[in-house]
Amino acid sequence: FRKYAPDYYTPYGRGFGNSSSLRNETGFYSGLTWQCSPQWAVSYYYDVFMSPWLQYGVNASAYGHDHHYLISYIPAKSFETFIRIRIKSQQQNTAGSPIIKYLEDTELGSVRVQYVYKSGLFTFKGRVEQTYYVVAEGKKELGVLLYQDVEYKSLLWPCTLWFRYAVFDTQSYD
Image (tube, rainbow, N blue to C red; front, side):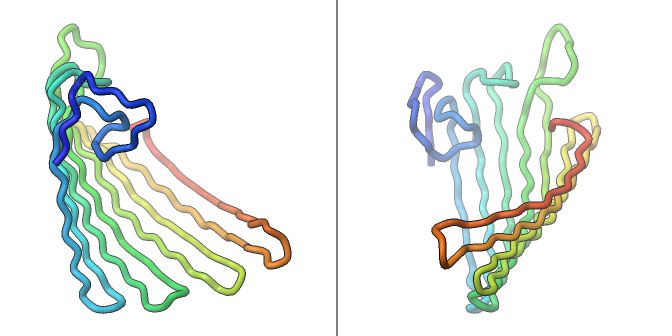
């Protein structure tokens, strides 16, 4: 359970919440993990939150909830992979510029597949992620991300060489 007052301020605090600042939020977070076998794990996390006062992009009291589903597979110390599904619903101001703004429901969802493979001095990491964003009137925006990392840790020098190749496509900022 969390409850941050609208006038609470901490310049260096890093607490848990829906927004990046530790203020103006009440919520409850819970999670459950089931270790099916030594290699497989299934997790579910749920967060419900409410902002009792105005905040950026929201001109009234608003609420939302967030679901996370995670399936991870670790067959060896050198390889691990997971798939994560996230669905987040919350309220925000209407788009455009009406004279009186009201709140509308939005939904942000994503499916992520990621892996890590370690072989000697090299580590390979890859991710594929598909996202969608839906506003109340049914406008749907899609995005996709693919990246591959290669990391080399030298035994002779105290340095790490790291390379990332990334490709993404999205229809808007959201």
